Length: 161
Ligand code: MG
Image (tube, rainbow, N blue to C red; front, side, top):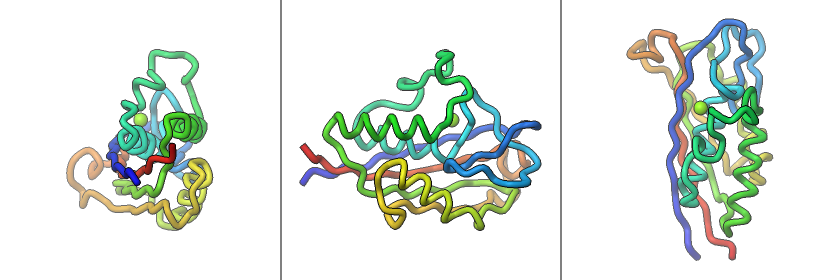
């Protein structure tokens, strides 16, 4: 069996008047959301890049360019679903995903299971195969100053055809 791994990284800046959506889950009561061409779901974007990387299929900007009006305000979970279909067409199946969200505020631990379930269901994996972790940046850098949120992800895939 042929197995491969990929990495993903993304960051988005906070903005007033936007919902905060992470891993396809809208965080209730968040003071600010993230800004971007799509819904700016930084966690889902990192997961997309990890899956594309593992399958050798490029990156999120190639598949969903921010110059394309089709993706304005896009639901990142719908983009992840398209990436899942692309993997399948290319003969790859996702095996597992691990991700870290780097954020000072708000606290996100209460939404961990909802994010795992949403991401896993979108990729067609059991929630046990999608891990989501949270950390702060100890007050350092752009995350520490509360300017935005960053996310890292790894994914592994296996050949199915
Ligand atoms: Mg992004």
